[in-house]
Length: 234
Image 1 (cartoon, rainbow, N blue to C red):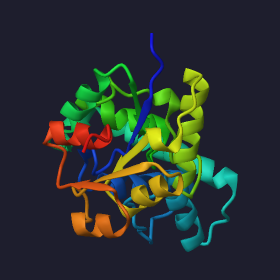
Image 2 (cartoon, one colour):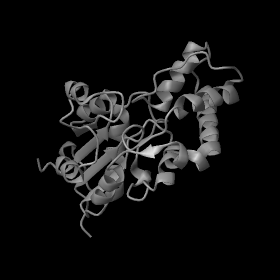
Image 3 (cartoon, rainbow, N blue to C red):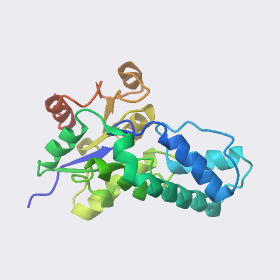
Image 4 (cartoon, one colour):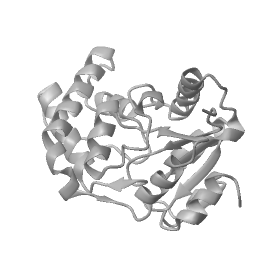
């Protein structure tokens, strides 16, 4: 079997799927469960890691930013998302073309796909499994929001994980990061990867190009064009 030559790293929220309003609700419930008080400050969630968001919440509520409190919040988040996991398929949606792009890339023997997401690992699974989007993704080599508050660290970790698992180096020119925010773009650029951005979130194609995205799409519905960009055939 030939070794893979392209590593594709996907964001989840507002790139592959949309779960309207649930992120804020989950943090409110998790904060109450972990800290025992009402959440007074609602941070921006888009493009950030769970560690970054949790550290901001702790600081804004006067709670010490210790690993103990961070772990308590992570556990509470995992618990509240697990409570809702059976209803996510009815409360959210897959963006047009997302499943088709994953499947088309998954059929190519030289491509391996994983995640670079601000979500915790178990939450990533809860979000993707109900929509059948997990099938073509190697969760083992992905990098998740528990790792760092600095999103580019996740790209580097996923590259190392993929290299270790497959026994071949994934150099910058063989890595593609796909997301919907300037944070995703910046994470790709810091590692010299191809930044593919999709304007299914709060940022327009113009804003994503201004952030440095190499390729932008309004959505992923044109599978042929998406694959051509990812495989650098454009």
